[in-house]
Image 1 (tube, rainbow, N blue to C red):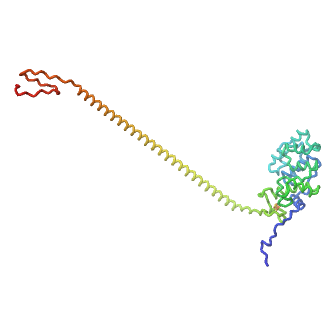
Image 2: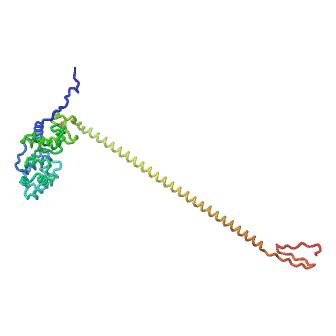
Image 3: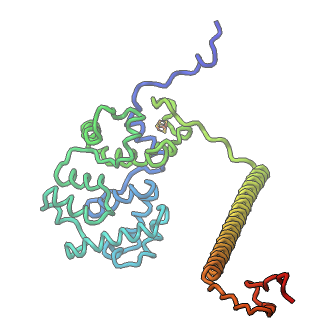
Length: 362
Ligand code: SF4
């Protein structure tokens, strides 16, 4: 029976990656045959610290330049940051790293009046930790290195960002805490290989097997076949050709412009609608105000008319009353005495009209 392509693909191994093989392979890939031998504790601390900030090959190159271009570490301390940064050019932030190195050397000089770390041999582990904690240039794993060198601290000192790599490769188990893992590794690795193992694990975690998934470069890893990690990252799509790139760029630009235009149009429309609504509102308010004023004026007019009518009526009534009173009070006029044979004179008084002529008169 013919086997399917899926069946032909071997499942990932569940065995851990061989630590010794990984160390050797990483050192070979970095082109580092050996690390400089240091007998002075300050040399060791600075070399170990630089391996955390620079690729291993660059660390060894920079360390060699410090040793050949400067008289000693005190000379580095009094040199300018610009001079020191030329040696650390492979770092992500060379000037920043140069300033931090100089700050640490200055701090050491002020603390001990000498650029050297021999005095730490007489200090307790907690005093040593306190000393390094003051200035952040020396990483935690290097402080553990110092404690291991001075006090036999039984751990293989590793930075926290190497832990995901140890778990993916199953060199360490997730049943243990980071400190327990470092203790187990210390027991596993022979004393002469400990330093190289630390350097190689830091190098592998920094260059290929990063702490975050975005930093994983499994397609470049020499242990891709034997690594038991099930979610290895595939090789990314190749970069598009320059013409295609230009076309994509143009299309993206066009898309952005269209989007921007649409947003602008929408904003303008919104603004216009708002303006119209405000205008409408203002007109309505004005009309309402006008109506109210008109109503008020009409009411006032009506009231005035009513008052005037009332006043007129009252005046009329008063006049009528007065007239009536006057009429009632008018004195009764005495009739003139009528002499016999004399006709009465024609009275001009409307109230007393002349008496009609009697048959014997005249
Ligand atoms: S980079 Fe990928 S393949 Fe390599 S050790 Fe890490 S997880 Fe495994």
